[in-house]
Amino acid sequence: MVADALSRVFAALADPTRRDMVARLAAGDATVNQLAEPYEMTLQAVYKHLRVLEDAGLVSRPPAPQPRPVRLETEVFDLMDKWIERYRRQAEERYRRLDTVLAAMDEATTNETDEQNGSAA
Image (cartoon, rainbow, N blue to C red):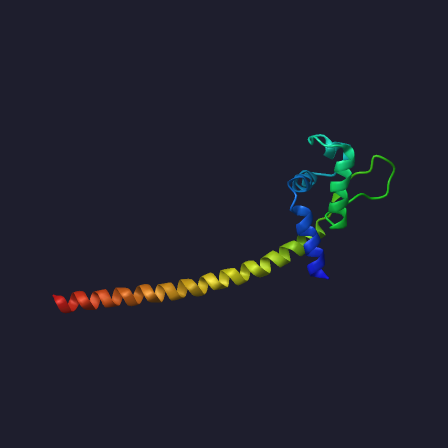
């Protein structure tokens, strides 16, 4: 279930126009017409983008008289953050282990060099 929700969110954010809409909504609610202003597309196309964002749970348009504001739903970002953080921690742990191995190899190389220089002198 969580994977399906994440798939919808990441698929929705794969489009640069939708990412831009989300970025603009991060500054505050906006009407559909306000969201449509910078784009060279029909209002119908803007509504299609908003439908994808709504289906993914990224935005909502509460029932109200027209014009209804479009709102960013921050809970979805918490879900994404948890997923990303999990894999970030795993990657960092791998890098820490690699750093330990490389440090041990560097120390062994330094010791060998010191022994060779000491016996040659």
